[in-house]
Amino acid sequence: MADPQGFLKLDRRTPARRPVDVRIEDWREVYEPFPKQAAQDQAARCMDCGIPFCHNGCPLGNLIPEWNDLVYRGDWQEAIERLHATNNFPEFTGRLCPAPCEAACVLGIPGPTGDGAAVAIKQVEVEIADRAFAEGWIVPQPALEKTGRTVGVVGSGPAGLAAAQQLTRAGHDVTVLERADRIGGLLRYGIPEFKMEKAVLDRRLDQMRAEGTTFRTGVDVGTDLSVEDLQAQYDAVVLAGGSTLGRDLPVPGRELSGIHLAMDYLVPANRVQQGDLQRPPISAEGKDVVIIGGGDTGADCLGTAHRQGARSVTQLEIMPEPSPSRPAATPWPTWPTILRTSSAHEEGGARVFSVSTVRFTGTSAVEGLEVVEVDMSNGRPVPLPATGRVLPAQLVLLAMGFTGPQQNGMVEQSGVELDGRGNVARDRGWASSRAGVFVAGDMGRGQSLVVWAIAEGRSAAAAVDRYLGGDTTLPAPVLPTSR
Ligand SMILES: Cc1cc2nc3c(=O)[nH]c(=O)nc-3n(C[C@H](O)[C@H](O)[C@H](O)COP(=O)(O)OP(=O)(O)OC[C@H]3O[C@@H](n4cnc5c(N)ncnc54)[C@H](O)[C@@H]3O)c2cc1C
Ligand code: SF4
Image (cartoon, rainbow, N blue to C red; front, side, top):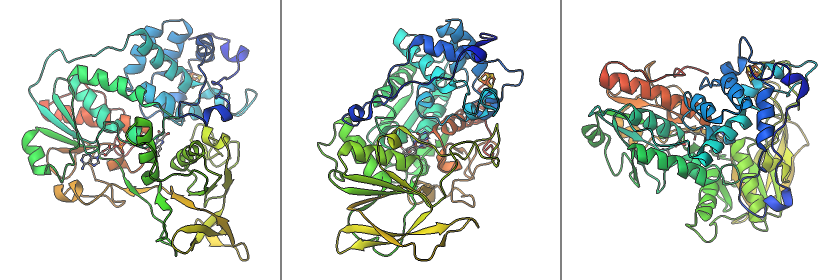
């Protein structure tokens, strides 16, 4: 155990964010450096609970009290070993994860210590990973023996990367096939720099290359290479193509110009940061922007619009405004439905809850949208009379989630069965209905989180290793049905 009295003496602390007026002038990550001692103090607060509920909150089963203890004692090098035992990419989750572990931390139980006083687990995680990279402790771990078996992984998001790293280290020859021009999936072209700078992704890819994973970009499986050809080239195939179909809003006026799916806006904005484009083809500069959808994707659009110089930004959400503290319906240690204020929300803009869009207005380009207040108490939006109003908007971004994986191309061609929600179905062993083809990440689960994608990639890798060799020692932290 770290300091037996740490939680009594020390408060929860997380890093300061850079001043808003400074950070919206650039695209760098929003957080100030976190002093080493502050991270050790957070680790010192961990009580090494007999039943560490934080484990339960984490799909990866991260050994949180163990690495908290090591950080408290200053043994950062052993801490990265323990962290890597369950998580291939702690530098991604430490930056991006909403931290269900913290929601489940015993110190977060409402009471004298107060709700929300959980150990700053995610911050300790990212500090361990970044320190380990800076110290040169993260080195390639090539397999000691090769199996002579080959695996093709389609898709290079966190699920595909986790599966590929596990299988390469198990001795298989792994090729990741990605249709985009760079590796990373949503880590590369969805999530903006201000949440995770791409250098963080690139240094991990360098390690994977040095371990022997092969990356092929610009290959759209189903178009450039048939699934049959893929199976002829590889002994096993993992589909990790993500959940990429954005939900649309088919209301009158949708055909007006200036209304875009969020990803059509975020991808080129990220390409500007990568140096591919001088200017974004869709820009918020000088415009009144309305974002429809109150989730993570909407928040990323919000931060991007401010950095592009929007005149105003309004984010609409159909659900009512959640309470700022944990409601009775989602008690500890469950994931609470609370009002989440991301760094992008802190940077400005208005958040409007309990509204639904009736129509877009304008002649050829969008000029506004008519919204109406709704009652969601029965689970469906019921418009409230005489609440209609028009919001000015010259740019509208649709960030209402994703309906599932793209069907045409690879999915249709492979003939794999889909589940009731349109995701690629898999059995308990991560196998699709097509022999030798496995499924991991959002393509099977539906749009989820980076931490789930990594957990799925690790688990699917164990299944593939068993399929190829009859047995496996690779860990499988989750089942396809785990929630
Ligand atoms: C804007 C946005 C912000 C997000 N922010 C967060 C966050 O802050 N924290 C968090 O935990 N989660 C976040 N998420 C969710 C998270 O990014 C995803 O759950 C995660 O990336 C899923 O990983 P994946 O590997 O399954 O798929 P993806 O990351 O979607 O990667 C799939 C890859 O497969 C490729 N591909 C698809 N079909 C083919 C084909 N036929 N041939 C070759 N390649 C193909 C795609 O080009 C893509 O690169 C966010 C999602 C979005 C959209
Ligand atoms: S639940 Fe919180 S206090 Fe308990 S072991 Fe986990 S991180 Fe430490």
